Amino acid sequence: MFRRFAISSLAAVGLLVGSAAAAQPASELLEKGIYTEETVGDLDQAIEIYQKVIAEGRSTRAAAGQAQYRLGCCLLKQKKNTEASEAFEELIKEYPDQDLWVAKAREHLPGKAGLPLQPAPWNEGEYLQLIVKVGSAGLVIGSFVWSVDSSQRNGKDIWRMKTLRSILAEPDNRGMSRVDVEKENYRPLDSTFRHTLLGRTDAEYRPGEVVVTQHKDGKPDVRTVKVDGVYYDNEEGTHLMRCLPLAKGYQATIPIYASFGGGQIPIEIEVVAKETVEVAAGRFECFKVELRPVNQAFWYSADANRYFVKLEAGGITAELAQIGYNKPGETKPYRAEDWGIAFAVPAGWYFYNQASQIDKSAKTVHLIDPEAAGREFVRVSKLAAIEDNEAKKSARAWAEHGLETTRKSFKEWKVQPDSWQERTVAGFPAVSAVGEYLADGRKKVAYGVFVLGKESASQWMLTGCDPADFVRLRADFDKIVETYQAK
Image (cartoon, rainbow, N blue to C red; front, top):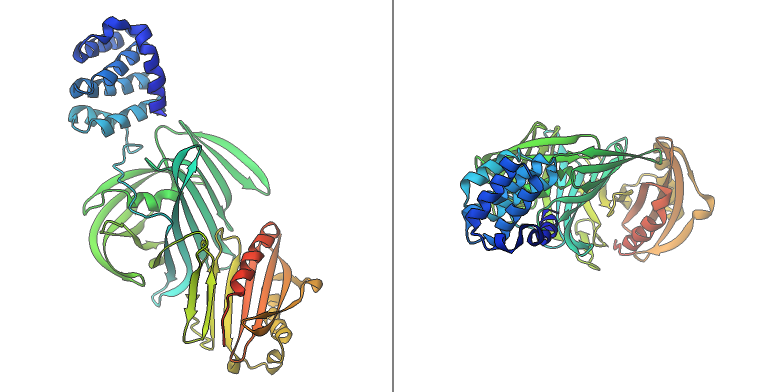
């Protein structure tokens, strides 16, 4: 925004200052600007002179750097805080050799701007999937996925950063967040945070303010929060730290805005160690970054990729399991040779295993859809281990067996009588059905596909789905089921 402001103001300089001023050396023009600001007290005229020095005095960097600083000060006096911050940031960016004025500019940016952010270390379509564990035994309870794609908005290049959360807990604990940021400086344009427990909050970032919309009981609650300087959205924080010049002993304060309740939070970070971390995705030399006051620890790879490798927070540990890339039209294959099963999910979908500590005769693979709008999984059981012989007589019998467990798990569960469909999956007989139930007083839709094979039987379940999302989710879910291969 500051650049647009500068361009429009410079157009008027020639009219107000005149040709005689244009011929003055930068140093003399700077003195005139100081006199106009401090003695005459005409801030508007001083701003125009300082901008003239900046425009014409690039070769005289000392004068231009001081003029840039004084421009910011004039804007502060006019209470144009956002434009002032942008002027100080411009000084830090364009005149890093002007130590005195850079230091003075930083005094006006107390952790709210001027972060030394580096070019993005990720590639187009990259995603990092971390598996979430708890306890000394490392019990898998879910998965986080961080992804980033490039796009455009109003002709401006942006990064679209997305986070998916899927935690296996009751009550239902999953969600999606998305934030669009300017590609050049990572400043947020807007964001959406949606969670089954915390609801939905949208944020729009404007100069000097954030417009926050919380959705409660279907009604939007809009409020405008004034901010002084640049704030980064909480949902881009993980990516943002990848762009910092991490090194042992490095410290910084990141001005974070958490739209879903936290508001303005200055997050202090410090690289406290360099450690070797071994996770499912490989072995990495990492910088350990501690965050205060939230008491979290992040590990980022020390190579040029700055992969997010590990997280410790609130009694859980998340570890990098996969580094991948989403490409339009490209699917992700899943295969378990020991079980003789395979399937594929579309780009934007993800999966992870949950090993049972009790039942070794069954395997559960959880799916995550692109919006975390439902809870999806496939559970494969060895036919020989199924004790209920009646359940093995037909696909419909197998479905009735599986839905009995569902009925016990969900409140007011019922199958829609006309939803039963016979089908064939992986060359085996199968049936599907749609059900509905109540969760937190709201209607939810569930969908199941039941396949009876020669050596195994599978239950494909889509639950926790709002009726408005069901048609879309079912279509993608059915496409995944149709890729299923089994014995």
